[in-house]
Image (cartoon, rainbow over all chains, first blue to last red; front, side):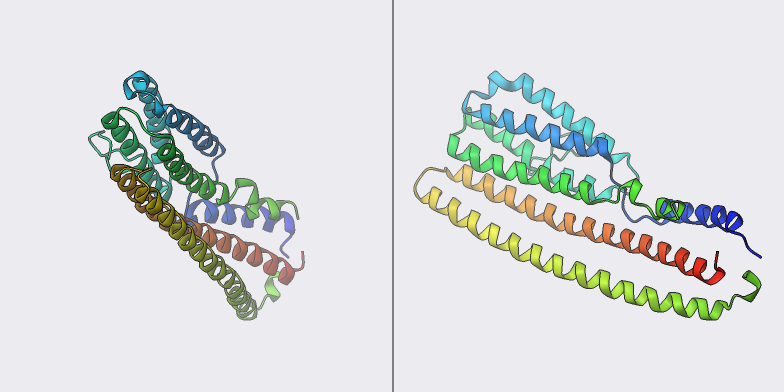
Length: 159
Length: 112
């Protein structure tokens, strides 16, 4: 006769293997979520400054770019995270040589600001709304990913 | 008792439950996707109308307008990727539900 004490560990092991091996997309990552929401604030604050000359904020732009690159590097190393990495490439694209992709949203804003010298408030507000939406899409996808505590292992173990 | 298990019956029961679960999960996702796509289309329409007016009013330059339209193109691609990601999450949730169901069904069969 099979007892629960025998069946439970066996099933738990099978389930853990299935969850880890069969997942289609990476699970929720609190660190990634916090990073994307925090850097969004930095980028939008910097865009507010684009009523002033680009040169006055070049150092700060460099800092924010570095922060964005670090986040993307972290995302690239998460398994089964291809969708989020591709979303980042639309918002802040960097090619294999480390050059910014000029069609991606944030680099194209910095390029335009540099070319124009200053931006007008009405354009900044419209542009900020676009950039914010890009960050929100990445954050929303992350927040909908399966939390590790949602797995059926916990449901199973709590039986 | 394990020796008395009829695996053919167990498997048929599991199969029926998986089919039911798939029907419920996929129908829900289809409705959500349709609603999201319609909302997104309305949003684009409103933005383009506003930017066109601002351009005609010379409150936006042609460069500003071009940047906004390009950013919208990138956002549309991000939306499509997001939908693909949400579908993948739905698949994983479905897999988890199936696993739960398998465990519950086996337990009910072995009566432990």
